[in-house]
Image (cartoon, rainbow, N blue to C red; front, side, top):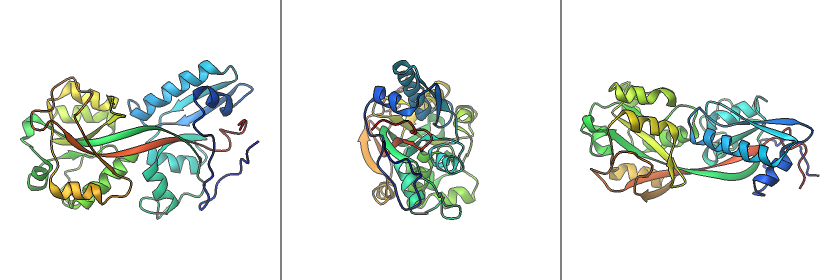
Length: 285
């Protein structure tokens, strides 16, 4: 039996491992246990992955029920875990690193207890798109023009990394000072774009296959174009710890978003499932 001692601020133990869904189902609980996993918002990539994890785990075990829970995002999940609100969760590597090092946004209210690391389940690739009516043809236009942007929902790990990249590019402060940052939930952004309240937004796909569900909703309701980034923004990606620069053709869209550029430059972010002692109290290692 593994040592299930809760992790303190300076110690992270390796646990669970990538033993597969069937093994995970056998590890998470017994005797009719229900294990709650904090994902993120409705229609997010993490929520989709959590639902798939729950279906697979429940099919392979008669003793455990995995129940995904809607939360405010990967970054917020660390606070939820620290406050004993969730026993297991999705969390991105960037948020976890910042929490362990007591960096913003965890500097004023540090996380005391950390989950045990599980296994990576996704890589999200963030990039820019703009509405056709905006006239935006690159991120340089956002710097020079009077445009409103959506840098993903606050509390999301993707938002934390995106905000840092935008800030390193020198764009965040002027946009924020002028009230040009839309901070709505992902469930509301499609309507905001359709109504002209957002001119450019950061979207993401998962593992080179599908768009996140909320971006699919925007795809249905607005005419969009992928846009290239300017030199300062690319340098910001290169200089941001936790951001992996990738280039690819946009995928998952029902419309053609490649009129301006055939490829996009992304800042990618990996995420993992992580578990606390309650979730793995019956682990067989």
